[in-house]
Image 1: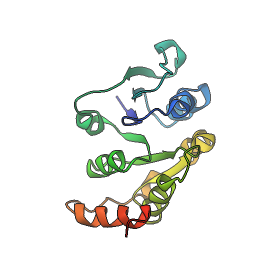
Image 2: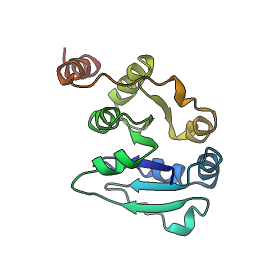
Image 3: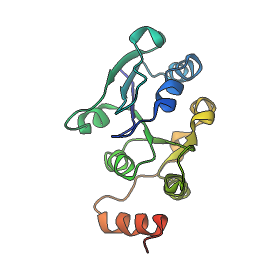
Length: 164
C-alpha cells in the first residue's frame, strides 16, 4: 500500500498535521496513488481521527523508540525541517518533502531546506503551499544524498546555523 509518512520529530507543528490531513491535501495525495497516511505528531495538540481524512487510511502516533521502520516502508516522507529528521529520511533514501515552519523566529530550517533543495536532495514548501506542492511535485528530480558523510553534513549545518 503506497504510504506517506509525516513526521514532526519531537516538536509541535500542528499546522503541518492540520494541513496534510485537510481534504484538499488528502485528495492530492490520493490522486498521486497514495493510500495510507501515517502521522507522527510529536507534542502537538491536534490529534486527527480516522474520519477526518476519509480519502486515505489514516494512522496516528505521538512517539516511538524509532521511526526507522516507518521511513523504510514509506513511499514519500513529509517532514518538518529539523536536521535530524531530514538526515534520517535522506539516509533512508526516501523522497523527501520538507515543510518549513515559517512561524519560527531566526529560521535556520529554511536555510537548511533551501540548500538541500538546491543540491536536489529534497523538495520544500510551507504549510500554505503544501497542497499545491503535492499536486505539482516532480519527485524524479531528486538525487540521493551521499551516504556515510556525517562530517560533511555537520560542517554544512554549522555553516547554515552560523557556527562556522
